Image (cartoon, rainbow, N blue to C red; front, side, top):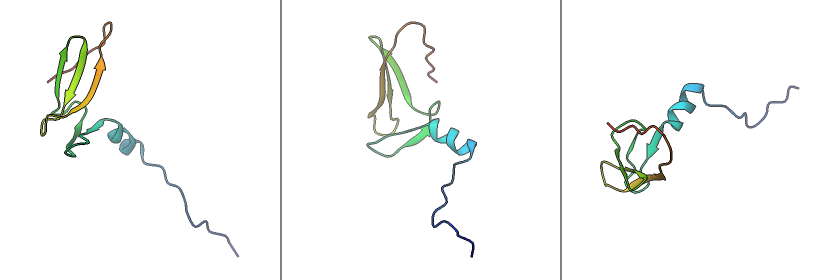
Length: 73
């Protein structure tokens, strides 16, 4: 008799994994968008702040040092 495992782990395809990593999620309202999507990006006093375009919550804030490229559309 052949044994079949009860659970077979599956890996996401490369595309699915890349999409997940390149997407930001607002924890307050649930808005999702690609990292280069509709987020409001501002740099003030050496800090790069990413805000949700729906509820204006801060989704990410990092100190900017050196010559890091900052993209804001």
